[in-house]
Amino acid sequence: MPFLSFAEAWRAYRRAEIRLPAKPPAATPRRIADAAVIADRFDLFVLDAWGVLNIADLPVAGAPAAVARLRALGKPLVVLSNDGTREPEAAAARHRRRGFDFAPDEILPGIALLPGLLAYLPAPETIGLIADPPPPYDELTGAMQPLADDPLAYDAVSAFVFLSSDGWSEARQELLATSLRRRPRPLIIGNPDIVSPEPEGMAAEPGLFAHRLAEAIAVHPVFCGKPFAPIYERLRARYPEIAPERVLCVGDTLHTDILGGRAAGFRTLLIEDGFCRGQDATALAAECGIWPDFIAPRL
Image (cartoon, rainbow, N blue to C red; front, side, top):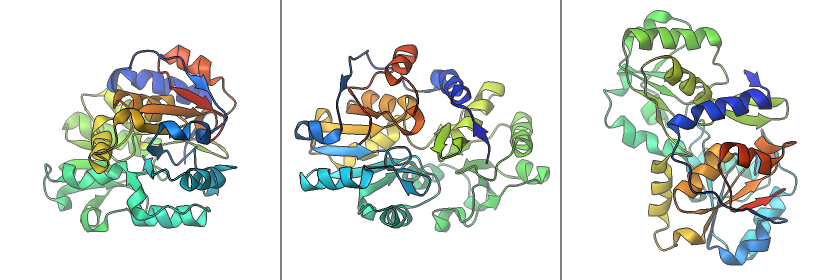
């Protein structure tokens, strides 16, 4: 699994801004202790997973108790995640092992958009799959062609679905880039994150490799998840009765959780943990021009 320093990850997010949604107007964030302080202002809490609820398989300190407090206040919760490795049932089971009580219908992953996107592509058996085993949505991905170290396999497929990158490498990245240079084809990215925070540092995610390809060659990746509009449209359709200003999106990354939430018309809370741990969150917001409505040290 490749790792980046914070500085490398931040530069990658800044370079990617040209392909991200337009930045909303600047805001002056209010600093609060935790989400419960402002719970009366919101009717739906949209929680990022990695960096807010958990780091790898460990819960973030205080996060299970924070979720319990919001539930005790009667607040609906949904986990909106860019995790490209699990369907809602598997994600909910993993959260339960971490001490959270989320049900599958409270999980909305970006890859929930994948079935709709595949309807516009050739048959699954002609699509190349980049995913760590076992891939999610086996009824769809099970027929795809796994890609690894055979250059001929990259040239043989009609499109690419890139879900996860733990087993990805620079050599495989070059095989993909070379094949796309020869013949541009659709590229679907199941996890738009550039990095995810791990105990050891910032782990590279599919978004990093997709943006690198977009910089280098004539390819326009289709991203499934935050900060792009389709996943927020799916969220809004699930809760049509809740006004956007009564929705709070909670996350640890300005370029995904905060940009995506505010661009969709929701309110946002930036957590000073996960991606932002050890950094000056206000200075980061000022540098990139992406401002949350609230900032807190934890959920």
